[in-house]
Image (cartoon, rainbow, N blue to C red; front, side, top):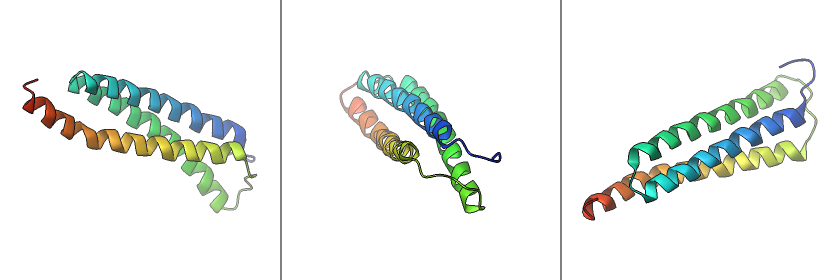
Length: 110
């Protein structure tokens, strides 16, 4: 990271990528409801990429602080971390739902 971390910019990058990830998760759920598993998997892959980007930004900031770089406290960054954790949990749950819905679709003859 550079000399001074713009914690607000970092927080917004985490929030924006995480929000985009949530949108992809919602699209995956919509596809899943229609038993369109290929589309659902594509949306989940996009969500994974967005969440990974957000996680890398967060981790770089934490590592910079651990290395001695001054990082001011930011409620916005705390919110960004909370949002990242929440959406990561949503992604995990939808991934766990995929095989359940597939099994139900097979049983229903879909």
